[in-house]
Length: 102
Image (cartoon, rainbow, N blue to C red; front, top):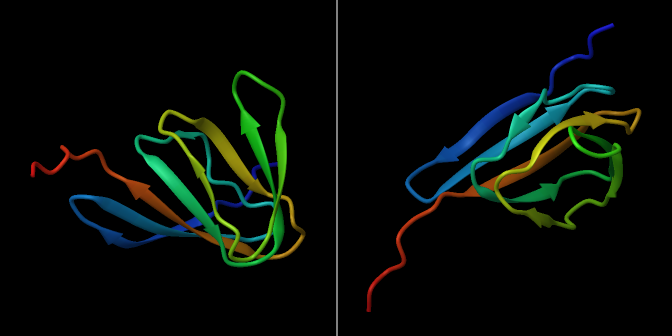
């Protein structure tokens, strides 16, 4: 049976960042995707996510409200809410830009 889809809401998208709020009903998923940019995730609730990876076993991550984590570009995965309740986080992607010259 197909899972419900997580709901992304773009809060900001400019030359240097993209900020997206991801809301998950219980068992909702993002769908398979690859991150184009380095990013930080800020959980807004306590919860557990299941991370499906193409080339390795699934991971389970216990997340705590306000405790962020960062990942590099190129991650290919599907994120599933394994919490049993609604869960959401804010994702901040850092777009590549040339370094400022002095």
